[in-house]
Image 1 (cartoon, helix red, strand yellow):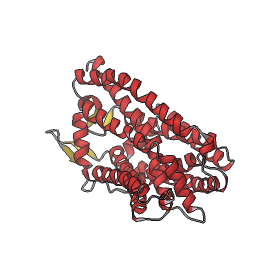
Image 2 (cartoon, rainbow, N blue to C red):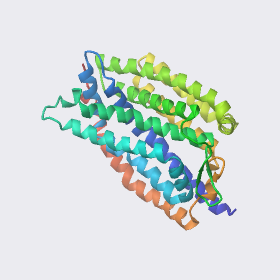
Image 3 (cartoon, rainbow, N blue to C red):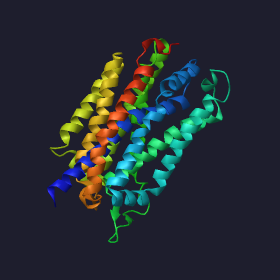
Image 4 (tube, helix red, strand yellow):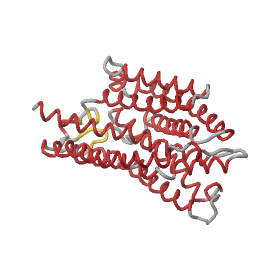
Length: 344
């Protein structure tokens, strides 16, 4: 295979992986915010929901830019692989997208359902839709992740998708991955929200972070146990010499983040929680390489022609010059004012 072609393939795959990491860190926290909105409780449940709306309101639409970015890179640079995955995982992908649309629209509808600024704090049908959709979407995306790493999607001789199991996305391993994705989103959101609040309200989210972090750790252990028997290829790659340092680094960051939550070091908790997710996803990318989906979809074999790969990869820095300053300005304006933090 031409080495220059492989280079462009690898760069395109790396760009998609970067988008996945960004979406997990930002969009994942949005999903988690919806979870805690649904399960707001206690005497401060109204303040909890208002804090979530205040934190999400300025940035939630921008966070989904990364999902669009990943989709565009995949269907442009790896069209055969994208088509095969889209057909084999049609149900979970489309249900997840429906959930994303429903949670976005319900978030807006609830915000404007009355003229009072306390509207978002009240339990309503739109609030329930927002919360339920925030649970369903990350679970289905995590389940799809499990299917891909389990090696349950192949290619028939004609290039069409070939499900290697009758109900390819309902294995115990895939379902466990779905719950792990949900718990991880809930943990990220709770950790982020600790920095958006003060006083007793901050303690509310701190307790939620402890619950979600403990659940995440238990589910991660379950996923590893199931991977050893149901995803042997991926498990072997995950503990290989080239991947293990990233996985170990991610687990270390998770432990430090948990310690920081317990010891009330909120900035440290956020930094290490984000680093944990980034390192574990990078570890997945390294373990998965050179496959888009094991066993039949090697990146180079499902990639677009070199001209397309080169055009997309070279256009990304140009797009970045427009995107990153805009995101920086958005976060600077709405996320860098400590006086705006919610209190009891």
